[in-house]
Amino acid sequence: MATSSTEFKEYDQAQYWVAPARNFRSSARLHLQHFLVQNTLGYLLEPAVEKSVAGFQQLKVADLACGNGVWLTELHSHLAKNNTIAQLDGFDINPVNFPDPAFLPSGMTLKKVDILAGSLPAELKGVYDVVHIRAFDSVIRNAEALKPVLTITMELLKPGGFLQWEEMRGDSWIIDSPSPQTSKEACNIIANVLKGAVRAQGIQKDWVDVLDTHLAASGFQNTRLLVQEKRKQDFKGWTEDYLMVWEEITDLFSPKATSPDAPMTRETWVDLFAKGVKETEQGVVVHQGRIMTAIGQKPL
Ligand SMILES: C[S@@+](CC[C@H](N)C(=O)[O-])C[C@H]1O[C@@H](n2cnc3c(N)ncnc32)[C@H](O)[C@@H]1O
Image 1: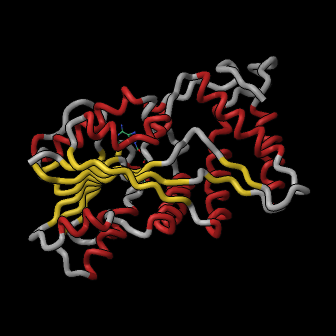
Image 2 (image 1 turned 90 degrees about the vertical axis):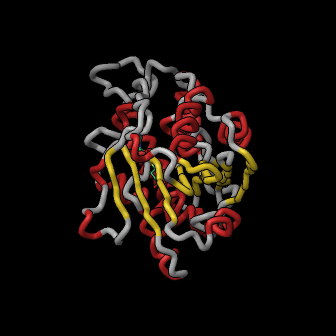
């Protein structure tokens, strides 16, 4: 099914993540996503990056757009096992899902920062051994919009410091059925509606597949891209994660009362979503195939 921009409210990436609806449900989804990503990657710090920073007196790590901070809290536990003392700082535009400082490990802070605001506090510049970014593609419309993020990252890093960025193609969904007899029609329609809406709004995610080349173009050295396929046994968990996203975006469709002629009203979406859920209860899975990790180093 094709879709047009008139049936889907303009997706405003600056507003989406600060909306009141990004509440405990969004955070729960991010917790689930964290553990699914970890099952796929098998590391928090990519092994070659971890080896390069092993033995640092006080490792300094920043996580940009850190969400609920789960990557950093897990990194703290991992580093503590190796007796590595680290300063771990998370930054996010929306602090609503930050754990209270009373429940954070020592040496970890979470701060409200809009990393796209243009200027960073001077005390943050040039202090980090590692900057980590994950799942930020929903905020980046196209390759051009990537540049400010890479500029900020470069500013935060010490000379020789590493950027590690994990990303998935947020504009593509793979719908698999366990057998030819099991229908995946509704899930396919949902995936096509969303792909059409992304296209209609001029959002391009092809940069994710070549993120390492963008790092190199922004001045990073020793750039690499690791591509890892999701595990079949995690497809059920990924499906639940994407169903939560599909449910979360219901409000982006106009109700029939205000847009009676829209081919996809909110009511139609709710109906389609319910059919999609039924299909997943019959074994249909929704996933995005693979996770890309781009690594780059700030020149010395
Ligand atoms: C998909 S979530 C990923 C969260 C986390 N990186 C993870 O993998 O669990 C995207 C995050 O980007 C944050 N975000 C969006 N725009 C931002 C901005 N301009 N500055 C800082 N954080 C931002 C959102 O609040 C949200 O927590």
